[in-house]
Image 1 (cartoon, one colour):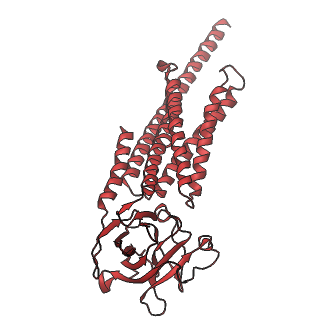
Image 2 (cartoon, rainbow, N blue to C red):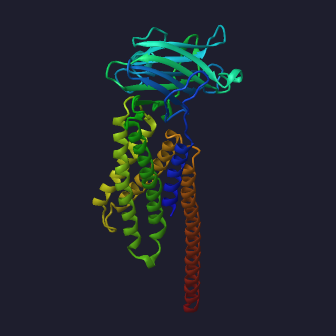
Image 3 (cartoon, helix red, strand yellow):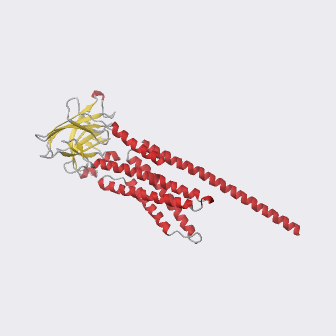
Length: 401
């Protein structure tokens, strides 16, 4: 039941995000034919494509991050749908006049590596006109996270209606050099390919988003719930004599099923990395590899499980417990890391997972307390039994004397 609740909350949170998205074709100065809500940063774009002369009129709606001196940028990459190579228009507050300025930049590889500051230079595309204005009147400022409109008119190459466009925003501008943007999942995914004639977005971004959701659901269920439940089963049910070997089969079955699901989720994660060049989550990746390797070692350990009478059995048990609990801890930590990457740190999905995990922890604490109570009760009964035997022996010895 907890798994179904978690799945429902995760899907409903994504549906809510999709339904709350909107775009507009009307601005204070122009009306456009088509518009599209972009998948990140509450951004959108509207445009009119004049097919007779391959001219594209567009406006990009972006939102500043609340900071004293931020920037918002939009651009086109003639070669691919990624940041490197983008011809960008970046808007920010002029450090001298305080007015909004829109300057052209080329994002070459040195910018990504942060070797040199980003300097404005002319673009090598057919850009006919550009401008920028705040959306919201005179009260809108960079400080309060205002929306800005970046207008551009450009000429596309003949018989080409698909454009790779990139958008982003940052916290600071040093002089006239915008600094690096944040590196969350949304910020690193701010790129797409659209067909300006049909108004359709290419499916690659949607596929990646779907894979991310599936990856998150599978791994949260396998590494984050089933694996800990299997560990709890082994720790607290093995002492119930009425169950016999059933606890072992339940434990092994759940762990193998969790590892199977986790392997599927791990493979999807590898695929996501291949489809997202330049997007890296170092800690999440390392934790995932570590948990997967530990899970594999646990499975191999079953093949070398000594008999209970074997002198190496105690060493095998110590290894099995250490590797198993380490795998559980890494899996749970990485699930929370995944929520942060997906920007779902305050979502209903995370709330549902936390409820399921806290329920499991509560049950484990109750069972742990109960096991210690039984342990001390048996120890006390054993002590009383020994005392009675000692008293009987002393009395018997006295009578014999």
